[in-house]
Length: 444
Ligand SMILES: Cc1ncc(COP(=O)(O)O)c(C=O)c1O
Image (cartoon, rainbow, N blue to C red):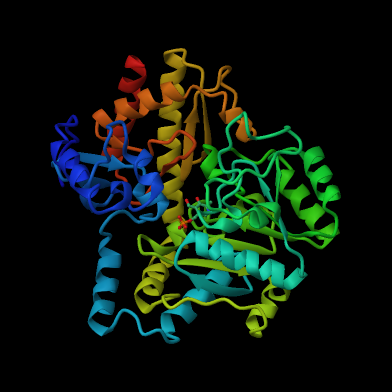
């Protein structure tokens, strides 16, 4: 995979494979988001190899990858470090369903890196680990309701797949939004246990908490809202969440599935200096293998630690996945690695801002170096909450993304998602990316 990125050629093999896939795979896909994640074609692109920051599809087109498996392949694809460590595990057994050494070393490292982490449990996906954190919070408080913020994403499971992306017509009043199930099949009882609140609004937060006084087990949020185009927390808003939760004896959960270990060794809680009671991790944690964790302060995790509150999983912290996470976190704990991710992302963010300014296209580039997004808001202002995203120019985002893809830059097709940067991206690849951004704005 050497040389320059070529303009996107044909994708006939992807088209044919999608036709074949629909005969055996429901909808031809393994996750509902896979169709949107590979547009602009009416079929997904099938990737078959990757190396460093690059991936290649089955038609032989090569791309610089800023999806990196939704942030998971943080060290790059086929990282030599991981390949070596995981090959050794393949020779000695990948999974025993028993306690093992790497899981202990990994838990110790997480406790060292993450401020809120005094006790850790492992799972296999972000959705599962969110469920674990919710169980821990409900078990600890003896209450049922969870307060979540409109537009924040916490996985596909029933528990919190509520008001992820409600349409304007169903979302309800601004200050007291309806709890809108993300899919048919989510029981009313579950929906009724979720209180929805707008993000970045202190007044609305206090009103919601007051209206459900004594009923709320946990408040959960994405501290940087990766799934709302990296909407940032307003200054002081996370501190306010902390104060309100402490005052009301409510468990504060940071869903750091996207921010964890990517925005620095201690994640968003270190970046913003606000320590939650519980936090959830996945994606960058595993470096490309499926592993997740929830971790928190001793008093909240204690009922689970003594076996009173239950949590299980055949595959939790297998030697294969725990080793992958251990190798990945040791790398991400090195200051030079985090710095490289941050600086690489900042270069691309700046290139987008410059190109937009030169072409007089109103937009905001928001987030941090490791994860960011461009939003085409009418006045170029950054978004503050989910409903701002309903007013952005999606068609323009789609066109931008399509122009990038044609120039060999692979990003998430969904404008409410974001770009993820790997530690493996080279200076040449950053130059190519910035060049493609300039060209894309020229034809927008
Ligand atoms: C913030 C956040 N939480 C939870 C999840 C769910 O993780 P998974 O897809 O591994 O179940 C995601 C997935 O994108 C996420 O972005």
